[in-house]
Image (cartoon, rainbow, N blue to C red; front, side, top):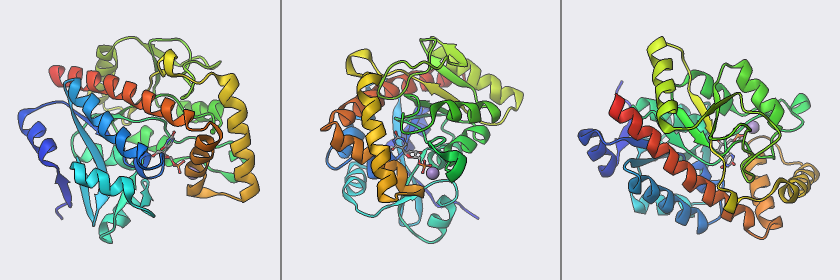
Length: 304
Ligand code: PSU
Ligand code: MN
């Protein structure tokens, strides 16, 4: 069976000329940010990757075809679309088989990146263990994916809407290397640092690329999670964002929000409660991750 994969003209060219590629997810566009900031962010992050010597490949399913790289018109369509499906590992093949359209989460983007031979993926935050998971069992499939798919994912840590200690415990259990970039503590998305010590620390893109290649050479399945702190000038200190997150979680509980709707609801509520400041920080950290992702992809390209 031939897989219905479509490479954009830009990605096709990068594959031919062996230009390093960096994968990008689309759920952050459809479910993570409001229009039109989501479109501005999607364009800026692609531009940042190009400016840093790599080619961006934003991933989504459009009418039953897995798109690796989107044209500007496709980005715009997704950014404006309402009710686009959110596709994780469980949903991706079913959506393609049914001829549907959907945005890929971290887990689904990793699967697509691997199929396309792309080793690096930059995003904002990953899914993880939700607070109260001891009763709801709400744990993102992103964590399992990191344990089995050989893609290095650059994020800014996990959001405080999650239970951070439990998220990192699960990653440890799954054998996923969690690497803080350039500091000893794990970054916490909107805040550059947290009280949690990082299991691993690396200070250069070269070290991250070398460790990715060693995993592949040794046949150790799974990817790496790189946690890149938001630039301090752009951060929202924990003392400010903490109470906002608590409020959003209380509102989600009162509204009976559950399952796949939890993350999008919380992001939207935090946006409202911070009058947009959470979004400004979110865009800054995604751009920062795009730069590091491009640097890692360049190292992998030159070594591979
Ligand atoms: N965390 C964020 N922003 C996001 C997401 C997570 O800070 O946009 C999205 C990502 O696509 C991630 C997904 O893969 O939510 C996780 O959803 P769930 O918890 O339902 O697996
Ligand atoms: Mn979930």
